[in-house]
Length: 211
Image 1 (cartoon, helix red, strand yellow):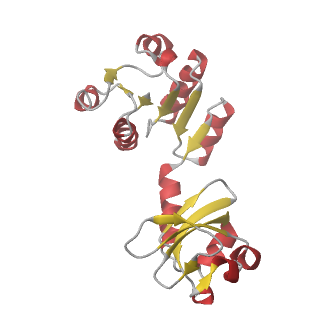
Image 2 (tube, rainbow, N blue to C red; image 1 turned 180 degrees about the vertical axis):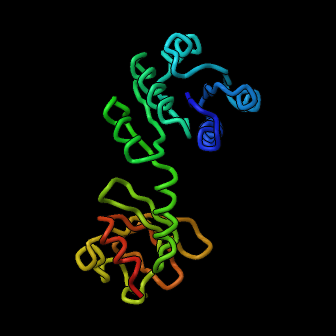
């Protein structure tokens, strides 16, 4: 179930549908509900802060719900609280501010996401060094898509000793024109190859900033 069919909620709902999931979309805006009538399993106009209304639309039968309400923190918090009270096993919610996120966590939301902040950080990291893409896995750990630094160009991963020298792990390597393949000790990396690197955020940043 996706509660709130604005840009963020619509993107989540449509992507989940493409992945083969049956999605119930809920919004109090009739225009948004009508827009998704043919793309989602169900698109329902309802007040997500009303526990009886949410029971009627089947919220008690879903395994996961995403509260994607933007611009109204109070409605977001109340909607999340309703879903938790109904007993939805997994409730995620979008937060607009740090304080909003803290309140959502306090009432029991299982995961809080900050799409604007996270995308801003992702873009900032991608603008520095050799980083192509960047994702924070939690407050300390990150995953980056980057290219091969001069220091290990032409070496196998065993020879490069990336983990002991830089304290990061290369998990996949992509040769130009190919798909990503699992990294092995005998894998030779060369200029132009793309690497998927994981580790502490500061170490991943440092590795991705090497010349």
